[in-house]
Structures are given as C-alpha cells and as structure tokens.
Image (cartoon, rainbow, N blue to C red; front, side, top):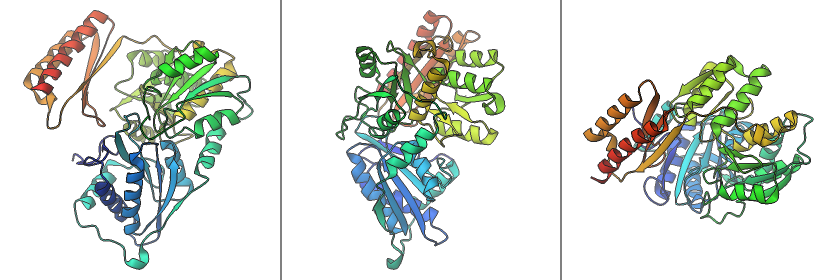
Length: 448
C-alpha cells in the first residue's frame, strides 16, 4: 500500500505549504505521539533540526502535538541526522525526529522519524502513523500532558561518539583539512571533531542564517571547498550536506570522490582486514557498474537495492552486512551509526590516509567508472509524465538501444518533483543519445 504523506525519507515539502505546515506538523506530532504511547506509560522523544528558518516553526508545532499526547520532548537544537539516531538510543527515547530537507534548498523542509533502536521507521510503522493522522487523535488527560526541555550537551555527546570511531592511537596532526558544512546541521560539530583529533581545520559553510543552507556549498556544490583546498594547500576536503548524512571527499587538487569511490575504498580495506561482514557491500541501482566490477575482482559482492538509504539499511540489517550506501554520498557503517554519517565516513577516509601514508589523490580513484549520465526533469503539480504513452515508447526504444552495452534507469524522486533519467554505457555517444531522447519525451509530457 502506498503511503500518502511519507516519501522515501520521511515527510517533505515546501515550508509553509501543505504538507509542511505548522498545522500538519502539530497533527503529525500528535499521531506519532499516540502511536508510541499506546501503552499509557511515560515516553520520551528527541528532536533535532538543521539550520533552516522554518525549523523553528516545525519544531514548536511538533512539540505541541507530541506533548498533547503525553510525550516528553527533548530538544537537541541544530544536530546532524545521524546524531539524532544515536541520541534516540543513548537517551532511551521511544522516538527520534529530525527536521530537515537534507540537501534541498532552504525553502524546503522535512520530518524524519527514528524508532527506539535508532533506525528509521519501517514502512509499516509509517502506514500506522498515517492511519492515526487521518482519524481522531485522542489527547492526553490534563495531568498527563508532556513536558519539553532543551538538552545543552547534545553536541558534545555526538562529538565524543564521532571521535571514538577513529582508530585508536591515530591522530590527524600535520594534516590540513577543509570541511564544508553547507551552512547546515554540522556547522559546529564537524570542525570540532576534526580539530580535537589534531587536524588544522579550515571551515567553509559555517555561518548559517536560515536561508543559505546548501547554497553554493556542501556536498551538492563542491566548488567553494575545492577552491579553498587549493588556495590553502590543504591535504583533503570534506563536504557535507545540510543534515550531514552525505559526504563528498576532495583530494589535494580539489578533485571529487563520490559515494561509489568512497565505498570502494572502505570495502576494499575492510575486506582485506576481515572486517567486511558477509563479504558484501550494499548499494543502490544508481551505483556505477565500475564499482561492481572492482569488488568482484577482489572476491567481494555488490548487493543492490532500490534508491534510498532506508532501503540500503533495511538490506544491511536483514542480511547482517555492515557497509553500504549511495553514490550520492550516504555512507552507512552500522558498526558506528544507524544511518548515513558524512563526518564518520570522512574520518574513515582520513584514517586510510594516515595508515597508508598516501595522499588523497592516490585514494579517491579506486576504479574507473563506466560512463554514466544523469539528468533531472522537473514537473508540475498533478503531472504524471511517466504515464505518458510517448514517454513509455521513448524509454522502450532507449532500453533496446542500450541492451547488451549498458543500462537505463528511470525513476520518480521520492523527495522532489523530479523524474531522474540515468544511463550507463561504454559508448558515450550512444549514452548521450539515449538519455537525451528520454529527457525530451519527459519534458514534453511535463509541459503538456
């Protein structure tokens, strides 16, 4: 059964526009509170957020809804998404909530939920919360209304946990590191962790004003960080997104390693050290064919899932694997965290640099990617371009052209009104032609 409000990563939309309104957040908080407080006992929830202006509105509305059903709320303030998963378990909360639209612009926002185990809620739990949301939510009796308080040491707890994932006995002394926090949730925590581990830190994107999150900075726009790396002669650049669950790594020349290259490095190292559980890496259908070939050459496997870190994590938990992620920069290491953590992935890359005594430029290119092209087509409200006959015909023709030489992947984004058209092929001319034909068909349907 399709979920009405929840997408691939919680509830998301344009701030102050349904469903991302104060009224909806209040109702969603009440529904989640009722779901997690069905036994009538005292329960608690932790709430973190990124630096968007609308976060204040949504935080207050969620708090009102949660306390109205008897939940005690602990407010963490600006905090990376993985920190919310961590603190949900360490503070013995029944529910964790992150207010963020991740890598999206400031005018979007979202609400992500974590269960008491620190993992994102299952599809079934989201279905049940939606059912409560559409019915009459019974409020708590006056004497059972919840309380709310701010947790002043939340960042310190995460900082210490992050540092503990760095190999014992290693230090970052002598390394100059640029860290771009995308004016987002990790703007304090990430530079602190790197500095306390010994690095000389050059921060970028650490002056949030409510509007500049992900704006010409962070993992989705690495140009500012690349320029800073080169200008300062830094050894490495770490670029996070707005809620710090994604990362891109830059070498000393400003060249970028995406999630596939980072996963290749970690899988190879962990496999050689006997740390890669099941001898497999979990990634999505978007990951490059070159990654799969690279792993096979080492006797390792690539297990693919649908797009979305929730599906990666679900497969990891089901099969007992401990490394997975997405080309977009989600790196999930379940030995350390319950969801993607860009900072922890950056620390693992730094550990590889220290242990191998190699520059970043020798580590970021683990395999030669098969040529891959991704185009996004935006569509308006009420449009369903993929249902158009002309689009379906264009997709079928492109698939036939690529058969035996590559692959085509068409999907609707779960977080934005976009159709994503991706293809891989050794023949770049054929690759470009196939993508262009589908994109043009989707654009025509979106504008009709």
